[in-house]
Amino acid sequence: MSHNNENILEIEDLGVSFDGFKAVDGFNFYLARNHIHVIIGPNGAGKTTVLDLICGKTNATSGSIKFHGKEMRGKREYRIVRAGIGRKFQNPSIYENLTVFENLELSHPTGRGVLGCLLFRRTAEILNQCNSVAEQIGLSDRLDTEAGILSHGQKQWLEIGMLLMQNPEVIMLDEPVAGMSVRERTATAELIRRIAKNRSVIVIEHDMEFVREIADRVTVMHLGKILSEGSMDKVSQDPKVIDVYIGH
Amino acid sequence: MQTLFRSLFKSRAEAIAFGIFILFIFVIFPLTMPIFRLNLVGKYLTYGFVGVGLVLLWGRCGVLSLGQGVFFGLGGYCMAMFLKLEASDPVTTAIQSTPGIPDFMDWNQLTELPWFWEPFKSLPFTIFAIFIVPGIIAFFIGWALFRRRVGGVYFSIITQAIALIFSLGIDGNQGYTGGRNGITDLRTLLGWDIRSDNAQFILYFVSATLLVLVAFSAKYIINTRLGRVLVAIRDREDRVRFSGYDVAMVRSFIFAFAAMVSGLGGAMFVLQVGFMSPSIVGIVPSIEMVIFTAVGGRLSVLGAIVGCLLVNYGKTTFSEDFPNLWLYLMGGTFIAVVMFFPNGLAGLADKIPMLKPYASKWLNRNKQEPAKAPNTPSSNPVSDEP
Image 1: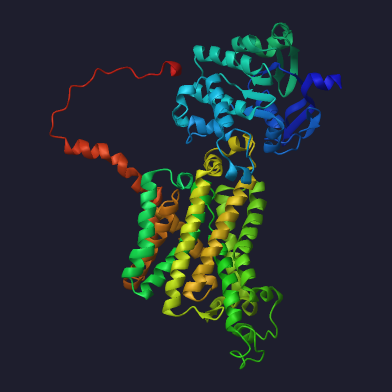
Image 2 (image 1 turned 90 degrees about the vertical axis):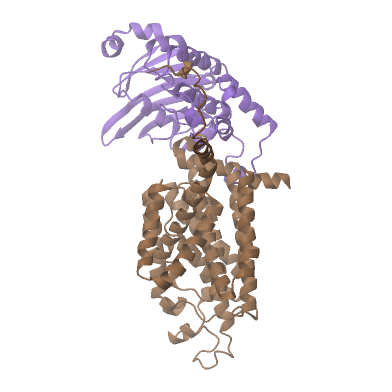
């Protein structure tokens, strides 16, 4: 039991194959509470596929994904989200035709059923939460802006903000700083540090500087398998890792 | 009152447009048109019910159904069955070999009323069925398809196939459905002669009132969170799923809602036109209804209704004079809408305020231009990434 309390997400022997090609194979992964766990690896290593498997976008062919000890594998996406696992996509995935405020409000967990949507009312509590999240992601003064005209970095932040509205226990971020300026990167690193105070975060990232800055733990993937795992220092000195990834 | 107003209209202009529409259908049309023309308008308005459903389903939720005629037809057939049973009492049908059943059944050697006709002897059941039959059927079709992530073109093709199956099914079962001729010779509703001018006048108002109520309920939905979720599903289906919504459920609900209001439209159609036949439920009418909606504006509830009125008015006047040209004209209109003004007439109306600066610029073109302000760099410091 103590094991369960420590790890919020336990993934064992996870695998998926597409027409015989094993994109992810024998993947074991333990996500500790309030940790930032970064997955790195060369292109095609299966990093994004792992996130797809956890969030239910792709169905695994083997293994188990236990969240609070409960099996998540095979559940539909919205059920996994409602259980408390949120996901940010690689390309900013926001509602471009809605305002920043509406984007955040739509992500609030009250009234997600059809009836709930019809009866949904904007309460002071929801309003407050939207405002406080907007402040965290630095978009307080853009609440009435249509999301489509935000800059790339702001869109990325908005999507993180939408996840925060859902208040999940596990947040998965797929390349959150891709295409960001140095300043935006620093701000994002701070943001991720802050949100990881009371939740666990899985991050996929290429930028080694950034990884060093945020990671509590690093998993290196290669060809669908785990190559190495541990602290950033340990991993970056692993000869296998240097050989396939960092050395290039 | 204020909150109700706000939950229906987003802007004053929208409310004014709706007011003008209500003025036209409740005052101007009834005062200026002979009953024959008014009855035609009433018939066009019943397509408006389908149009409103399509605005939610297609315009807002991004699911194009080419089979809305099916639901219009289901509602219409429910109504027609009730009226037909009332018109087939044993006294009037005494000459048949089996008196008391609809005439077409008698012609097809049926000797008793089929079981599924029995409940339609009751008006409350019929009214219930007008909503529930299309609603349930649409919900299950929607559930089966949306659950499996069938969308886009595939959904359109399947619904079109359903429209074909439905009209052929009615066509091929003459004894049970009246076949190709449909259910005709409908006379009274609870003893009230629906063919008289007086009844037609009243039915027009009933139909118009119901349409306005349906339009309001659609606008209400659009302005709730559900309305925003619909747009979100249209634009970013995946994100909605990962915001924790059951996309298949939302879509099925909207499909069922659209089907229910279409069914109501079909029932009002039967009451005003006096018959129902497979030619009104098949592929062609289903696509026509999409065209009405597209021309009027698939994003706008009012636009879709006005589209139904205008295109049908055009159809009636043009096809009286140039019956061969009409189809080409309608096809051409549809292509023009898709290519040049995808949001239809309502989309054009929305653009009017945007033309204001151009208009004033044009009016002031002879006046001297003020000295230009020095160009300030507009680049956002945050987005300086190449």
